[in-house]
Structures are given as structure tokens and as C-alpha cells.
Image (cartoon, rainbow, N blue to C red; front, top):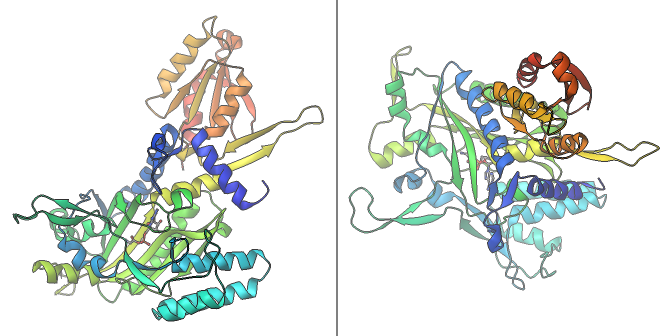
Length: 482
Ligand code: GAP
């Protein structure tokens, strides 16, 4: 593959061609930054979601899961700070009327500098961006854009407006909120976390949970992102997998480090090597955070955030207490004290994780021999995450081979997702399964009728071996354990 941009474009095209991800409402030319998951994409998404859920709830002593509604009382977002603070500095180009997020505009220019071999200039620019952002110095940021003569990609000019803040929440109207007559403005949640905070006492009391404990949730979130590009990396409707860990005040440094390490280990458990990840400490903290970092993965478009780990203090619970006038405290009988717990949050985007897993898995292989040019595209997913685990192929559509294949499939489908196909040459069928990342294919041929053996073919090595048909299920079950 020529370069990383070409690789990224190839992944996007592959996702569409093989039923992973489609632009939303494509027959109407799509909807910007909104995507639909197809038959294989939704299986991959479910497998990643289930893996996260299991690691964060079932395999933990003290974390439970909930499923809160997307709509919440509008005061939630006042208390959480999103109404007043959830905005990004934006700048418009006066000639094209195109709006840019200031940090993205400057970062893209820094990328160009780096690609042109000006690494020191690029680093200095990013350092200055961090410094001015941390100080909320909008005039300084504008002059940084002007002195570097950063241009609009559409108009090609540097004719910029002043920098202004834009709120990212989507709003709609609801007929009646808490008995009020007039239709009230409510928001589509921009993060799932607040559904956890408002249920903190419900869950703690009914679950008789003792601090430290966590509440996990997976669900949709919505943000009116101004810069909506880079495929499913930045969407307007996306899914988050979040966990709020409630702790005794004073223990936040210890738990912050604990979750940084635990979450990095989870990422490594996906089989992605350490060098593809890095931590990025936040310079400009979100309105709720006392410390925060990102886990970044090296996508074909560069190192970018996949997950955030945030030390949120008692910001959210205290504010909900103030706005709701309901106590959100915990009695800690070990120290005989009532307090508002502190919170460490882990927040990972499901769609970004999918893009990470796809980027890591996408492989173009040259299989040419001196006699024949050949190649394949294979998605080398961790087998546990693959949409289809086992493909079953009768060599021919006759001689009783389909019946044996269907019986094998019937015996396996309750345990994992299988796929049956009898059309085309076996080689073509294997390649189609490579393209969707199926780790195991089994072919039933005439020898199967004689000695009950089948050919099992492994996706990554393309190695083939004969095994007894009764062994197939356990080979796959062992192979898909993470
Ligand atoms: N509750 C904290 C919170 O929402 P965040 O850093 O704004 O923190 C957490 O978001 C994660 O959600 C990000 O690391 C990213 O993976 C994902 N995410 C955020 N905005 C997104 C978007 N527009 N499209 C896709 N994923 C997004």
C-alpha cells in the first residue's frame, strides 16, 4: 500500500464492499458523519461490546452494569456543565464559509509540516497550541493561525473570522417535562456518564455496594461535531462504553493509575502490540476533570484518541446534589463518615475501537509465485472478535456432501456464528472468508464419507490439515477464546 492515506481509504472501501459499514441513508446521498453497520459490521460491533462488557463487569468483583435512557431531564446537563461548557473553539473561513475546530485546523497543518520533514517546527507549533489552549487564549490562537498562514482547504485563503465557542449538544422538544405544560427543550445525551451519576444512589442502595465500586454502561451518545470526517472516527451519533468508579476522596491518584494500567492491559489483550499505543496527558482539562489522559492508537491517519481516563473528583455528584436538592452521599462505615464519592472514569468509543481493530486487522498480502500473480486482502481479527467464526463448505453440491456440511453446521451454530456456502470454487470461497476475517473454514469432500475427516483451513497461515469431523467444534472453540 503506497501510503497511510491510501490505506485508510482502502479500509473504508473494504468496509463498504464487504458489508461492514455503509454511509447512513446512502440512497439519499448519505448523512454527514452518520454511518450504519451492515451484517458483518454489526457482528463485529457486538463482539467488541460484549468483550468490553464482560471484562468490565463479569470479570470484576465490584462493577455492575446499567442501561439508562438517552433522554434525561434537561437540568442534568445544566448540572453536568454541558450547557455552559461543552463547546469547542471554532473559526470560520470568510471566503468559503467553512467552519473548523481550531485545534484540528492547527493539528492538520502540523501534520503537513511533519510530512514535509519539518519535525521541529511541527512540534513547536503543537506545543504552542497546547499552551494557548490551556490558557483559553483565543486571540493568541487566531494569531498562531495567521502567522503560520494556515489556509482553508476549500477557498485556499487565510481570511479568518475571530474564534468563537459552539455548543456540541443536539436538542429537541419534549411535550411535558416533570408536569410542565410547555414543550421543553431536552438534549440527546452527549455522553452516557450522566445516566450513571443520576442513578448512583439507586444502584448503590439496591445493590448494597461498598466503595470502591463501579457502574458500567454502553450506549449511544450524540454530538454535533463541526468537523465531521475521518469515517467512523468522528461521528455525530456514536456509541460509548463508560465506567464510573466511585472511590473514597484522597485515593484518586492511586485509582487513576490503577485504571490507566488496567485499561492499557485490556487494549493489549486484543493482540495489538504496545508500540501501536501511547498515553497522552491532557494539558487543557475538560470542565469536570482534575486529571485526564487518553489512550491513543496509531491509526493510518496517525496517533489518535480511542479512550479517555478521567479523574472527575466529586464534580458531577456534587453538582447533581446542588441542582436536584437530593443528597448523593455515601456512608463509609470503615471510617464512620458521610461523603460525596470521587470518581475515576474510563470512557472508550465503541466505533473508534472498531476502527482500531479494523485498521490493525486489514492486511494486503502478495501471494504471487513465479508462475502466477496472486494477492489477497485478509482481516486478521482476533478470532474472538471475528463476525463469523467458522465457514462450512461442501466441495460439491451433490453426492450427499451438502447434507454432511449442514449437519456439522447444525452441531456448531449454537456455540458460535457459522456460515454455509456451496457456490463457486473452494479457493474463491476461502478468499471471501479472508476478506471478512473468518478464522476457520472447513471443506467436506468425498473422503469425508469414507473416513469422517474434513479439511480445516486456517485464515492467517492458510495452512490446511485433515481432522476428524468431530474435532471441528472444539478446535474452533479453543481458537476463539481471547
Ligand atoms: N464521559 C467522558 C467523555 O465522554 P470524551 O473524551 O469526550 O469523554 C470518550 O469521549 C470517548 O468517546 C473518546 O475517547 C472517543 O473514543 C469517543 N468519542 C467521543 N466523541 C466521538 C465522536 N464524535 N465520534 C466517535 N467517537 C467519539
